[in-house]
Length: 325
Ligand code: F6P
Image 1: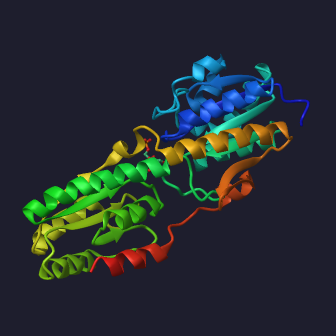
Image 2: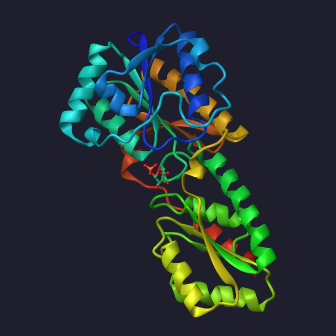
């Protein structure tokens, strides 16, 4: 165990994800169990730069295990991409005598962590992002809850779609990664899935919908990832003009996907990752992210996490296409 770590800072950064709260709880209580002081840093790196720090006690993280969002607040902090911002962050950590930092967030947040680790601060990252685009973990915190939300939304849309014999175009989040859309398409029984990893054309989508209509389907669901080469509004307009049998409607699910009570899976994952992150920091590890690999929680170098992007597995794409018949 590292003798040096006595004060641990923890922050959540980037887009929030359901499960960040149980993760903060696990970090705080594991730190306290190991006789460390845990300092919560508000609003991600922005709070680090503005000195928004508070000591977190066990009771302050009580009653948050079931809550979505993040009790610490979060922000996107472009300052951390600049040297000046990184130097200021380092100084703030030194000033508040933080011996080690735990960063819960997505890819951009891990970049900030890497920059600080390279300047000598022990940093351990925890993956939290609904996009599931991060290298080094099978699942990030929040993905499972977001998928459950998507599943519920698609089920509801299918009810109304069937009643009116309509095609619903459903846009999911995911930035440049098609994971959410692809999995939502599989579990929602979509007729068509559009993801950045498999560019398509409006004509191909129209053909698939005409086929579904002619085979007697009462509805069609088209799941469109926000990063897809075909944008949902453009698709809706063209399908109406082309005429595919079904009339069409479009739903952009947006930030609904980021909210809600964390699922059982996310609570468990967040808890395991939080405990492991503190253990890793106390054992002297730095410049790593904790990630789910198989059934285990492993350490992955932050440099690997930020230099690679996880892409959607196209086997699922082919599977969904086959099953859409
Ligand atoms: O990274 C999570 C995410 O929800 C993406 O899926 C989406 O593109 C982006 O964040 C939206 O960001 P914001 O909440 O800043 O609008």
